[in-house]
Amino acid sequence: MSMLAPVRRDRIIAELPQCFHKEAALHSRASFHPQVTGACQEQRTGTVGFKISKIIVVGDLSVGKTCLINRFCKDTFDKNYKATIGVDFEMERFEVLGVPFSLQLWDTAGQERFKCIASTYYRGAQAIVIVFDVNDVASLAHTRQWLADALKENDPSNVILFLVGSKKDLSPPAQYSLIERDAIKVAKEMHAEYWAVSSLTGENVREFFFRVASLTFESSVLAELEKSSARKIGDVVRIRSADGDLYLTAQRRKSKCCR
Ligand SMILES: Nc1nc2c(ncn2[C@@H]2O[C@H](COP(=O)(O)OP(=O)(O)OP(=O)(O)O)[C@@H](O)[C@H]2O)c(=O)[nH]1
Ligand SMILES: [Mg+2]
Image 1 (cartoon, rainbow, N blue to C red):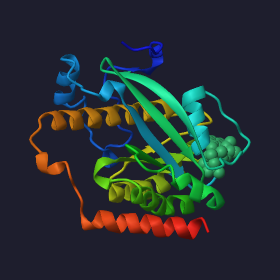
Image 2: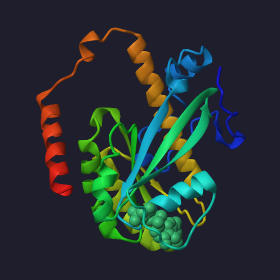
Image 3: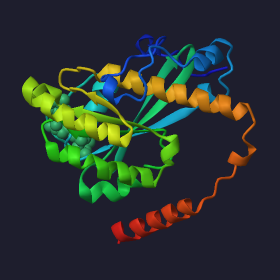
Image 4: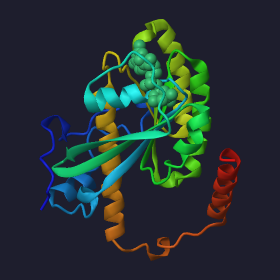
């Protein structure tokens, strides 16, 4: 029995929210995977309903990561810039296809001097949201490095990626369409889903987080179904030489940035 209060009515997801742009979508199916719908109807979602999925939000300083989270979680917008120091997080509870599902949204610092603290919280993410400012091409170019850093702490095959262009309200349509072309290219290279949002007006913010919750939920249920089919015994222990390298890289990075 759950001790928690019921999920807010505006956090109930009954249908798969659609992608922002078909060209750079994780998938463009019109509805949830049939196996997922079936599992939810038959209450075969295992531990998914008790899980909290970690989502990390990374990107250059001042691109609007904190404002994006605050717009969704608190429906507020602050026009003054207050740098995030290290990390912050917000919890959001959803109900997807009748199953409770929680997201822990980790808001990380973009400033170089706080990056070392922030990167220690990257581990164990189920989704990585890489934010850039649609009015700043350099911030788009830097997204590759943000992704590389976040992937050092996570298993690339188990994490889903979103590339988010922020501050859309400041970009005239003609200028926006130019950066969108580049952003879609980057998103495709990364295998990320592309979104453009405005935290000032709220445009696409709710739609984006609903999509994050839905796709994370879908992948959690599919993983649970695969696990319970108990056929892949060889998958239990996966020690590869590449993992060892990653560990060394993380150690080296840690000793360098914290000295
Ligand atoms: N016009 C407009 N301004 C925005 C938007 N989102 C954020 N801003 C402004 O951009 C500045 C930086 O926003 P933050 O959300 O604090 O940026 P951040 O990415 O969290 O920065 P760090 O914490 O330093 O990494 C603030 O002055 C915000 O008001 C937006 O959608 N539109
Ligand atoms: Mg911030």
